[in-house]
Length: 545
Image 1: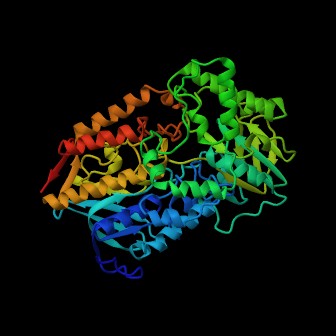
Image 2 (image 1 turned 90 degrees about the vertical axis):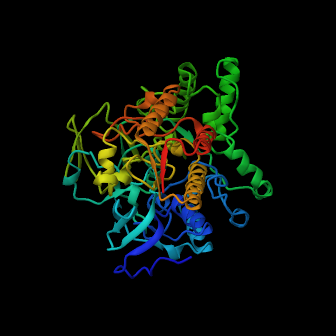
């Protein structure tokens, strides 16, 4: 196998079998697998280091919400035996160290160009190849364009009125300074109480002289109960790792979380509350598995939502603040539940103030701080923005991607992102999408979802190579049917009820088309579906010689 030209050579077009966009979990696994199957390849990533999302989201408190031994690669047994995870939920530094280790261990860096963003990818129908260009002046000619861009990799535009007038430092959780930020003694404003804000704010509060938290929508926050891993526990996992991986692939969420098969109201009130208490004390995503019908039965969801709201009253000492922190208007889980540490406890600190923008609307930011609609003014030494992402599609629409006839992907997705099985889009031959829109992705363990997609992608490329096919492309009818399937399955759950502001539907972005983007059927049904498609001669795809 030939490697890509040296990183300093931008003058010669790079000709490879596959170009990979992104060097996070998806990109690294693709590189490893492509090389194993004899494909030449090159990956581009705008970061200074591999890691993708975990390279950029290095804000204080950044942490995964899936157990470390499950949120890791299963493609190499020696890797999983050698690597030592230290905590239940790995922190950003530990995940970054792991992904850097993977890049080094498997010599993947020779096929990666960092600090290099893909600006355009055009399908040339004359040569049936993708022409990919970067901001560093690279031109790459490839048969396959593999989009390993991540679901949460492009921050949404800031929609805070007057923020451009603020003259102090502004820090975004999605692009945190490498050397960190010292907030000691400062007056700080934090905007946003989604996952990033919930993780960062308790850590910032420990340093800041005064922290003002601006909340637009309250979220359901589950305690993480993170802890160091017991060596005996780790030894047991490593002794049975292969079986653990197999079991994870047999479960809808792609990880082991001890789901309860009972429904919420087939048990007594006392048993139900005891189960919620046990899950709350145990912490983490296992809370979602307390009963099997929490996401399909409104009454069951009301029970768990009421439980969490009662917990907020127990923890937060100020009644008005507790009231503001209680989520209403959508089911628990319809917007991604947040796993945090000391979130509610943080609002008992003397140096922390919550500004509920539903009760006290923001007028605008000023040069020194902000002014509320009631005339109250604040001064800040720094502002932290945890305002979310242009989920799923943001990374695609930030590039100039053109398929057959020069049609842009933005145009093709003008009614919302349409794919067949979340794998390919009509009019864009040989462009494979990895664990993103139209697939389980964020509704499952992302690493398990990524491994599924990488396996399917390389298997399909092998099929094409072995049988003399040049291109594969989704049909319009198939992708329309799949979009309908994704919506139909979502409609059997409570997820669509969180559409007001939910990034699952793109509702957090003004003007973004509203369709439910992740596949809610779980990874098991998803894999069964694509196996049926493959066994039926890649039904819904057109293979051309």
